[in-house]
Image (tube, rainbow, N blue to C red; front, top):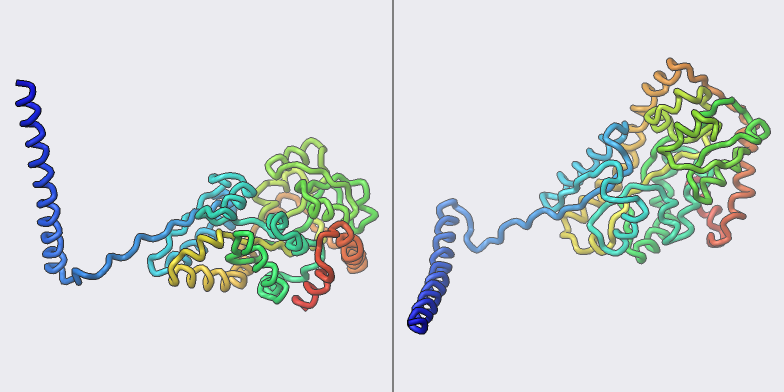
Length: 352
């Protein structure tokens, strides 16, 4: 009885299997008929699904430049003819910037916004792009990126798995402090907050202060409690962090016209269709000029709000600015023996 039941079950399974195979052919014919009724070419390939690139941004949704970053992604998507879907994720929600960059170098389908110093672990010379008083105006960022030395370094970092999509102006960096200063001597002894990297501590040394390192999220508290006497950043970042509530003097040292870059995987880029590559290249190349306008459009209103809250502007004279510039040119390169010979001269030639 059991043998007969088992035989019946096996026969039923074989019959169902054959029916499924036959049904597959009928389904294909039906699909073809449906295509014909819709007036499409039955032999044509359906459009490939858009390739998803996730942009891990350090910016929060309340950051005044977040919308600009989001629009940048939208422009790429529109220019890609449906081959790309770039999605922005705020507040490093995909991971810490350095971790995401490492993953990108190994082929992760992501984009990360950062500054050139984040690439110095891959190509040390990139840290020079953040040197105080080296860049003299916002337009220098695009000129340097697209220059012979800039593209030379780009090719070197591409060999390490990273491709720079764009390099844009992020803002003029100045100091917001609790006690005003107008030269190196007056800044001496002041505890000035900076990020814990060699170039950022050099930024403080050039100004004349003592470097106090902490995360950006801890800066407000550091100023409030006297752990730090001041912090530097573009005006729109100082305002967004509400540092003007605890520090009332904005000193226009103009020590850095800050660049921001966006990087993706070179391997991922190479795997993309031509339309996607073209969109990334053309939108990225055009963005530096647009970014200058975007930054300037938000800075003015925020500066006025800071002044209404009691912030006083301090303008060091040209002699003080020249002293800071000369100190930087003479001393900062000595701290980076890993830089190639003649690097600063080549950068100066590129932006001259």
